[in-house]
Image (cartoon, rainbow, N blue to C red; front, side):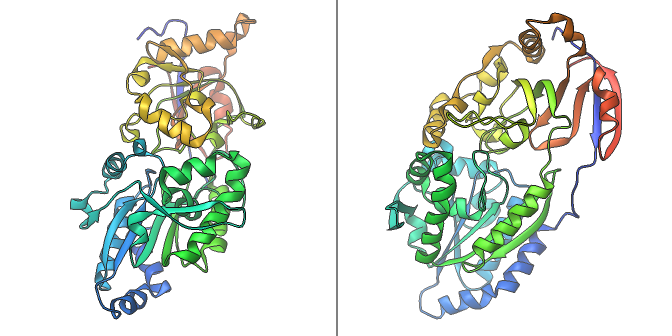
Amino acid sequence: MDVTGLPLFYRVKRSLQGMPPIEPGAAIDREWDRLGLDATLLALSSQGAVPRIALGVGSRGITGLPVMVKRLVERIRGAGAEPFIVPAMGSHGGATAEGQLEVLQSLGISEAAMGCKLEATMVTVVLGRTAEGLPAHFDALAAQAHGVMLVNRVKMHTSFHGPLESGIHKMLAIGMGKEKAATLLHSRGPDGLRDDMPKVARLLLAKVNFLAGFGVVEDGTHRPVALKGLSAAEAEAGEQELLKLAYRLAPGLPFADIDVLVIDRMGKDISGTGMDTNVIGRLRIAGKPEPESPRVKAIVVCDLTEATHGNALGMGLADFATQALASKVDFRLTAKNVLASGFIERGRVPLVLGDTAEALRAALDHVFRDHPEGRAAARVVRIGSTLDLQEFHVSENLVEAAQQLPGYIGSTGPEPFN
């Protein structure tokens, strides 16, 4: 890798606002008992055949997810019911049942590890229509179950903001609604998604035997710090409280003004948009204004995670990419997800360069094209991903500013870009 002409970098570590981490299995037990789910399932069992409970699991890389799902499987079976896991991820996994099962397995959710069946279909049934006439699609296999449970992370959405964003309601309305629901609800744009998704979710909460949704909040270091079990009656108010907590704990870039941001990895397991739009300050939605902060002039993205299975939705948020990333893109799968979302800009291919150094050099050339003398003072930040913001690299001229950041721990360097 030729680093000629590139700035030297310092590695910086900071402490992000957080809370004591939870033990996921113990948190599941606590909320299970609070909701009285043993008694609920035993009542279902008394009606005759062993009740089958559908457990919806999504495509996000949530820390401790296999532990949570495994414990839910054990608790369901311990109460006399039979669990089965269904993918609750809309059009992800190439909008195929096989692809969605592969996504689950890449997250550690397999039949062998969980001790129960994984059942997937893209077939849905319509369980009703909202007052506006929107159909409420629902996984056909889960619709036949005696009860439904979900487990999902609650966080800010990457396309809109409102009382309910990314969490249990979205998983219910879109994740469990498969490609049909994902395409339909995204087709009305971010405002429609913000307004329509909760309406569909409320309808489904009334139509299915929704036993519980387990909402997880992570801190800025990707650790689960809160988990709440929500009944149908508690779901809306409970998720809103979890979302408020997620907002308070959400990390951001170390600086509001950056010339070039280098992101080592993107993928669906990191964010629904590959890179969290709330972190990078870019929406790329036609007709919607871009966020006022942070202000990043150019973004370089270097690679795709293995867990994203070639889905590069969100690469259009970047300006430059590497050949390593481009070689991993599954364009058919990516197109499926981009078309379902309706946000075409996010699926565009950035300018592809040979390696990370070459891409950074091109980004600097672009930013300082009309005033090359400013390149010596370029403000460059490098992060592992939009989930990894506790440690990062900064160009040498930013190290003093980094030392003034809240929670600053220390820095090492300088060292060449690598």
